Image 1 (cartoon, rainbow, N blue to C red):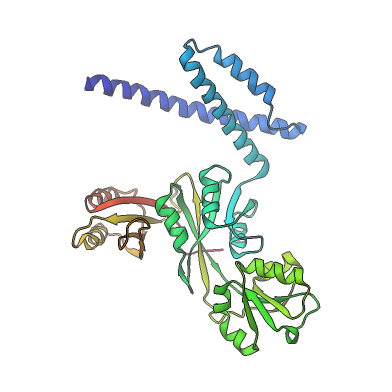
Image 2: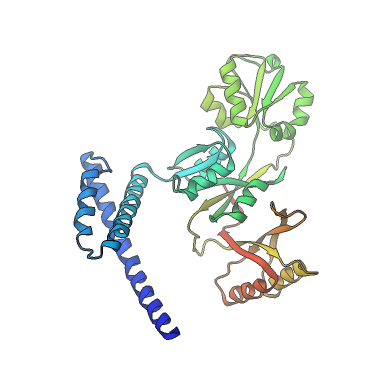
Length: 362
């Protein structure tokens, strides 16, 4: 029986290999069809053509039981082809949390200059838009040099299915923005995200401004622009001023010149490139004395340098934690494979969350 099972699995593996090659050929053909439609201004969706394809191809299947499954297969395949053609037409869709002009919006634009940036109401919505296929990638903050880690993003990466394929550093410069005819002496109150207000505390105190919190720096800028009030100022980026028709009164007002946010690019597929030289691991350890020390020791044993180690609470288990680690190097070499084998013995859950190129500034 075991030999029969292995032989059958071998057949399936061979078929899957052939199907992978045919999938690439089919998508190449879909790209050529898109170019024809683009040239002649034709819509991507051709419902009549798809119905004919289903009808003609289903006739090739003799089994009545399998026919219904094959129809689903064809519909899914044509849906993927359309999605690919829409991507060719519209460019990469990049999800971010916030509104136009937020630092995440700016980061997404610098990483993917020709992309279509899609505003999402929160981190989870942006993340799930990639999981659901609505967007191609998500750009989410994972750490700020002033405020520390962004726990919501780290939790999504740990519990979800997307991979980190890049980490980029954006230096944050806060500016004082106001309506076009305002001067600094007119400003009585400033509006911004609580973190931005904290970063600019010394400047705000020096000027004697009142403060008001907003959900986002760009939201604050939008509120000031719509108010038309010369007494109101917003703390946000210079790029945001241009979007909402505001005047930049002063730049670089945050007290720390070294205010940098690290943004992770997340997608369904794990990147495999020599340019990506660092690795993110996430794991939980067995509930035994010394388990974490053993895990850290194994990493050092195989010559990997840890550049970051953080703990995060497990949501469903009080007083239990998972760990986020950044390593110099990838796991492609033999020592990486051996290290993972040993880690599996002391970890309950072990996940390669992705690879990235360290210290890439945007």
